[in-house]
Length: 113
Image 1 (cartoon, rainbow, N blue to C red):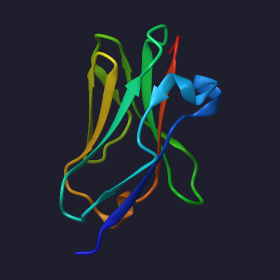
Image 2: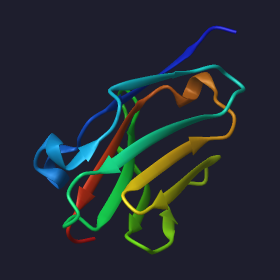
Image 3: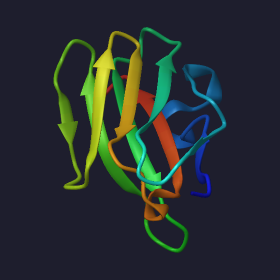
Image 4: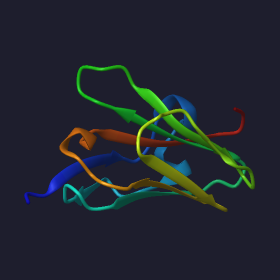
């Protein structure tokens, strides 16, 4: 099967203020039917909340997950996505990639929910 391209950008401006708060790869590839994960690492320990957002072309941005340090992950979607938070790392996992998963994914952080 042809590779599936998932774009991942480094920051979400109005929440983080600058890209220096989180670190993540600029993009990743996956194969339809396979699993894939996007990782985001928090670089500023003062930012306790972490978030995953998704933007499909021509559609509004949507919140996928949020997490407070040491707390459970809150799921805002009914899709087959999961997220796990370990200290400063927030992972977004796809259990079975589809072409419809191609989108821009944003990792964000903030001091308040």
